[in-house]
Amino acid sequence: MRAIQSREALEQSGQAYVVAATCHRRLAFCALLADAKPDRFAAHLCHSAHARLHFRRLVSGDHGAESRFLGATQEFSFIDALAAGQPDLATAIAQLAARGHDPAFEYEDDFLLHHFLHQLLLTVRGAGTADLPALLTRWEVVLEGGSDTYLDACRALLHRDARFFDEALQSTAYARMLHFQKLSRDSGPNDELKKTEGALFMNGLAMLRLAELQGMDTQREYPTLPSLARVPTGRPAPPPTAWMSPSPWMSE
Image 1: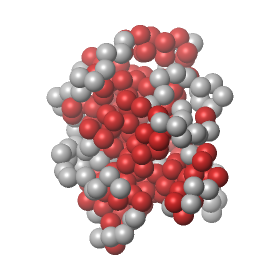
Image 2 (image 1 turned 120 degrees about the vertical axis):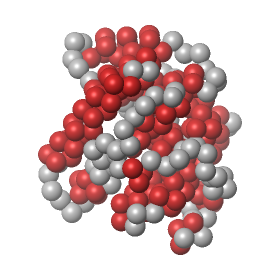
Image 3 (image 1 turned 180 degrees about the vertical axis):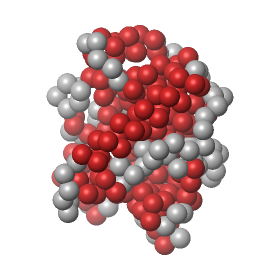
Protein backbone atom coordinates (compact mmCIF):
# COMPACT_ATOMS: atom_id res chain seq x y z
CA MET A 1 0.00 0.00 0.00
CA ARG A 2 2.91 2.35 0.68
CA ALA A 3 4.18 1.71 -2.86
CA ILE A 4 0.75 2.54 -4.27
CA GLN A 5 0.32 5.67 -2.17
CA SER A 6 3.81 6.89 -3.07
CA ARG A 7 3.46 5.89 -6.73
CA GLU A 8 6.71 3.96 -6.58
CA ALA A 9 8.05 1.77 -9.38
CA LEU A 10 5.94 -1.19 -8.22
CA GLU A 11 2.84 0.96 -8.56
CA GLN A 12 3.83 2.28 -11.97
CA SER A 13 4.32 -1.24 -13.34
CA GLY A 14 1.06 -2.48 -11.84
CA GLN A 15 2.76 -5.10 -9.70
CA ALA A 16 1.72 -3.47 -6.43
CA TYR A 17 -1.95 -3.88 -7.33
CA VAL A 18 -1.46 -7.54 -8.21
CA VAL A 19 0.35 -8.13 -4.92
CA ALA A 20 -2.40 -6.36 -2.98
CA ALA A 21 -5.06 -8.53 -4.60
CA THR A 22 -2.97 -11.67 -4.00
CA CYS A 23 -2.52 -10.82 -0.32
CA HIS A 24 -6.25 -10.35 0.15
CA ARG A 25 -6.86 -13.71 -1.54
CA ARG A 26 -4.38 -15.33 0.85
CA LEU A 27 -6.12 -13.68 3.81
CA ALA A 28 -9.41 -15.03 2.47
CA PHE A 29 -7.95 -18.55 2.55
CA CYS A 30 -6.83 -17.98 6.15
CA ALA A 31 -10.27 -16.72 7.15
CA LEU A 32 -11.98 -19.82 5.77
CA LEU A 33 -9.46 -22.62 6.26
CA ALA A 34 -7.95 -21.56 9.60
CA ASP A 35 -10.80 -19.64 11.23
CA ALA A 36 -13.92 -21.02 9.48
CA LYS A 37 -15.29 -17.49 8.98
CA PRO A 38 -17.06 -17.32 5.60
CA ASP A 39 -17.99 -13.65 6.06
CA ARG A 40 -14.34 -12.64 6.36
CA PHE A 41 -13.52 -15.01 3.51
CA ALA A 42 -16.02 -13.20 1.30
CA ALA A 43 -14.86 -9.75 2.46
CA HIS A 44 -11.23 -10.41 1.52
CA LEU A 45 -12.26 -11.86 -1.83
CA CYS A 46 -14.16 -8.63 -2.45
CA HIS A 47 -11.04 -6.66 -1.49
CA SER A 48 -9.08 -8.65 -4.07
CA ALA A 49 -11.70 -7.92 -6.72
CA HIS A 50 -11.94 -4.22 -5.88
CA ALA A 51 -8.14 -3.90 -6.03
CA ARG A 52 -8.09 -5.48 -9.48
CA LEU A 53 -10.99 -3.42 -10.75
CA HIS A 54 -9.32 -0.24 -9.51
CA PHE A 55 -6.12 -1.20 -11.36
CA ARG A 56 -7.99 -2.13 -14.52
CA ARG A 57 -9.80 1.18 -14.54
CA LEU A 58 -6.51 3.02 -14.13
CA VAL A 59 -5.07 1.12 -17.08
CA SER A 60 -8.12 1.88 -19.21
CA GLY A 61 -7.25 5.53 -18.60
CA ASP A 62 -3.66 6.67 -18.91
CA HIS A 63 -1.91 4.50 -16.32
CA GLY A 64 0.90 2.35 -17.69
CA ALA A 65 1.44 -1.30 -16.77
CA GLU A 66 3.69 -4.20 -17.70
CA SER A 67 2.08 -6.69 -20.07
CA ARG A 68 2.65 -9.61 -17.71
CA PHE A 69 0.09 -8.15 -15.31
CA LEU A 70 -2.63 -7.65 -17.91
CA GLY A 71 -3.30 -11.09 -19.41
CA ALA A 72 -6.67 -12.78 -19.00
CA THR A 73 -4.99 -15.46 -16.88
CA GLN A 74 -4.05 -12.76 -14.37
CA GLU A 75 -7.71 -12.05 -13.61
CA PHE A 76 -7.87 -14.28 -10.54
CA SER A 77 -9.80 -11.49 -8.84
CA PHE A 78 -12.64 -12.15 -11.30
CA ILE A 79 -12.76 -15.64 -9.84
CA ASP A 80 -12.67 -14.15 -6.34
CA ALA A 81 -15.62 -11.86 -7.09
CA LEU A 82 -17.74 -14.79 -8.30
CA ALA A 83 -16.75 -16.91 -5.29
CA ALA A 84 -17.73 -14.01 -3.02
CA GLY A 85 -21.22 -13.92 -4.52
CA GLN A 86 -20.67 -10.60 -6.31
CA PRO A 87 -21.58 -11.16 -9.99
CA ASP A 88 -21.85 -7.41 -10.65
CA LEU A 89 -18.27 -6.91 -9.47
CA ALA A 90 -17.11 -9.89 -11.53
CA THR A 91 -18.92 -8.48 -14.57
CA ALA A 92 -17.13 -5.15 -14.21
CA ILE A 93 -13.76 -6.94 -14.18
CA ALA A 94 -14.69 -9.14 -17.15
CA GLN A 95 -15.64 -6.10 -19.21
CA LEU A 96 -12.10 -4.73 -18.82
CA ALA A 97 -10.22 -8.03 -19.11
CA ALA A 98 -7.93 -8.80 -22.05
CA ARG A 99 -9.69 -10.43 -24.98
CA GLY A 100 -6.64 -11.66 -26.80
CA HIS A 101 -4.04 -14.30 -26.02
CA ASP A 102 -0.57 -13.02 -25.02
CA PRO A 103 1.83 -15.85 -25.95
CA ALA A 104 4.69 -14.19 -24.10
CA PHE A 105 3.07 -14.77 -20.72
CA GLU A 106 0.32 -17.40 -20.98
CA TYR A 107 -0.55 -20.67 -22.68
CA GLU A 108 -3.47 -20.39 -25.06
CA ASP A 109 -5.52 -23.11 -23.39
CA ASP A 110 -5.15 -21.30 -20.05
CA PHE A 111 -6.19 -18.06 -21.73
CA LEU A 112 -9.23 -19.73 -23.29
CA LEU A 113 -10.39 -21.05 -19.92
CA HIS A 114 -10.38 -17.60 -18.34
CA HIS A 115 -11.64 -15.80 -21.43
CA PHE A 116 -14.54 -18.25 -21.77
CA LEU A 117 -15.56 -17.75 -18.14
CA HIS A 118 -15.41 -13.97 -18.59
CA GLN A 119 -17.52 -14.09 -21.73
CA LEU A 120 -19.98 -16.60 -20.33
CA LEU A 121 -20.71 -14.35 -17.37
CA LEU A 122 -21.09 -11.33 -19.65
CA THR A 123 -23.51 -13.31 -21.80
CA VAL A 124 -25.51 -14.56 -18.81
CA ARG A 125 -25.70 -11.01 -17.45
CA GLY A 126 -26.75 -9.57 -20.81
CA ALA A 127 -23.51 -7.61 -21.15
CA GLY A 128 -21.85 -9.53 -23.99
CA THR A 129 -22.49 -11.45 -27.20
CA ALA A 130 -19.31 -13.49 -27.67
CA ASP A 131 -19.36 -16.59 -29.87
CA LEU A 132 -18.93 -19.03 -27.00
CA PRO A 133 -19.06 -22.23 -29.12
CA ALA A 134 -16.23 -20.84 -31.26
CA LEU A 135 -14.09 -20.37 -28.16
CA LEU A 136 -14.58 -24.00 -27.20
CA THR A 137 -13.82 -25.13 -30.75
CA ARG A 138 -10.57 -23.16 -30.68
CA TRP A 139 -9.75 -24.74 -27.31
CA GLU A 140 -10.17 -28.19 -28.86
CA VAL A 141 -7.81 -27.21 -31.69
CA VAL A 142 -5.19 -25.98 -29.21
CA LEU A 143 -5.36 -29.28 -27.32
CA GLU A 144 -4.49 -31.15 -30.56
CA GLY A 145 -6.60 -34.16 -29.66
CA GLY A 146 -5.81 -34.05 -25.96
CA SER A 147 -8.37 -33.93 -23.18
CA ASP A 148 -9.04 -31.27 -20.57
CA THR A 149 -11.64 -31.64 -17.83
CA TYR A 150 -11.85 -27.85 -17.65
CA LEU A 151 -12.99 -27.86 -21.27
CA ASP A 152 -15.54 -30.53 -20.42
CA ALA A 153 -16.86 -28.43 -17.53
CA CYS A 154 -17.07 -25.31 -19.70
CA ARG A 155 -18.88 -27.21 -22.43
CA ALA A 156 -21.38 -28.41 -19.82
CA LEU A 157 -21.86 -24.84 -18.58
CA LEU A 158 -22.51 -23.64 -22.10
CA HIS A 159 -25.16 -26.32 -22.68
CA ARG A 160 -26.48 -26.18 -19.11
CA ASP A 161 -25.93 -29.90 -18.74
CA ALA A 162 -25.97 -30.39 -14.96
CA ARG A 163 -24.99 -34.07 -14.96
CA PHE A 164 -22.05 -33.60 -17.31
CA PHE A 165 -20.95 -30.52 -15.38
CA ASP A 166 -21.06 -32.44 -12.11
CA GLU A 167 -18.85 -35.18 -13.54
CA ALA A 168 -16.37 -32.76 -15.13
CA LEU A 169 -16.08 -30.62 -12.01
CA GLN A 170 -15.37 -33.64 -9.83
CA SER A 171 -12.78 -34.91 -12.31
CA THR A 172 -11.07 -31.52 -12.34
CA ALA A 173 -11.07 -31.34 -8.55
CA TYR A 174 -9.49 -34.79 -8.24
CA ALA A 175 -6.86 -33.94 -10.88
CA ARG A 176 -5.94 -30.79 -8.94
CA MET A 177 -5.65 -32.76 -5.71
CA LEU A 178 -3.26 -35.19 -7.39
CA HIS A 179 -1.19 -32.31 -8.80
CA PHE A 180 -0.75 -30.69 -5.40
CA GLN A 181 0.05 -34.03 -3.76
CA LYS A 182 2.92 -34.44 -6.22
CA LEU A 183 4.49 -31.08 -5.41
CA SER A 184 7.78 -31.53 -3.58
CA ARG A 185 7.73 -30.61 0.09
CA ASP A 186 9.49 -27.43 1.13
CA SER A 187 9.09 -24.63 3.63
CA GLY A 188 8.29 -22.05 0.98
CA PRO A 189 6.11 -21.62 -2.11
CA ASN A 190 5.07 -25.25 -2.59
CA ASP A 191 3.84 -25.67 0.98
CA GLU A 192 2.04 -22.33 0.81
CA LEU A 193 0.33 -23.37 -2.43
CA LYS A 194 -0.72 -26.73 -0.97
CA LYS A 195 -2.22 -25.11 2.11
CA THR A 196 -4.06 -22.40 0.19
CA GLU A 197 -4.79 -22.96 -3.49
CA GLY A 198 -4.46 -26.73 -3.06
CA ALA A 199 -6.97 -26.83 -0.24
CA LEU A 200 -9.64 -24.72 -1.91
CA PHE A 201 -10.60 -24.96 -5.60
CA MET A 202 -11.30 -21.32 -6.40
CA ASN A 203 -11.94 -21.84 -10.12
CA GLY A 204 -14.42 -24.48 -9.10
CA LEU A 205 -16.25 -22.04 -6.84
CA ALA A 206 -16.49 -19.60 -9.74
CA MET A 207 -17.80 -22.28 -12.09
CA LEU A 208 -20.37 -23.35 -9.53
CA ARG A 209 -21.51 -19.73 -9.35
CA LEU A 210 -21.90 -19.63 -13.13
CA ALA A 211 -23.91 -22.84 -12.98
CA GLU A 212 -26.05 -21.35 -10.20
CA LEU A 213 -26.65 -18.15 -12.21
CA GLN A 214 -27.96 -20.32 -15.05
CA GLY A 215 -30.32 -22.26 -12.81
CA MET A 216 -28.35 -25.52 -12.95
CA ASP A 217 -28.58 -28.06 -10.12
CA THR A 218 -25.31 -28.78 -8.32
CA GLN A 219 -24.21 -30.70 -5.28
CA ARG A 220 -23.62 -28.71 -2.11
CA GLU A 221 -20.06 -30.03 -1.72
CA TYR A 222 -17.29 -31.41 -3.92
CA PRO A 223 -13.66 -32.33 -3.17
CA THR A 224 -11.87 -29.12 -2.04
CA LEU A 225 -15.17 -27.27 -2.51
CA PRO A 226 -16.70 -27.32 0.99
CA SER A 227 -20.18 -25.99 1.63
CA LEU A 228 -18.68 -23.41 4.01
CA ALA A 229 -17.08 -21.75 0.96
CA ARG A 230 -20.37 -21.50 -0.96
CA VAL A 231 -21.10 -17.85 -0.17
CA PRO A 232 -24.70 -16.85 -1.03
CA THR A 233 -25.15 -14.33 -3.82
CA GLY A 234 -26.29 -10.83 -2.97
CA ARG A 235 -24.68 -10.18 0.39
CA PRO A 236 -23.52 -6.55 0.83
CA ALA A 237 -19.92 -6.08 -0.30
CA PRO A 238 -17.36 -4.04 1.64
CA PRO A 239 -16.86 -0.45 0.44
CA PRO A 240 -14.94 -0.33 -2.88
CA THR A 241 -11.96 1.41 -1.26
CA ALA A 242 -11.76 -0.83 1.84
CA TRP A 243 -9.01 -2.92 0.25
CA MET A 244 -6.67 0.08 0.63
CA SER A 245 -7.14 0.18 4.43
CA PRO A 246 -7.54 -3.40 5.69
CA SER A 247 -8.59 -2.36 9.19
CA PRO A 248 -11.18 -2.91 10.56
CA TRP A 249 -11.97 -5.75 8.14
CA MET A 250 -8.90 -7.77 9.17
CA SER A 251 -9.79 -7.52 12.86
CA GLU A 252 -13.39 -8.66 12.58
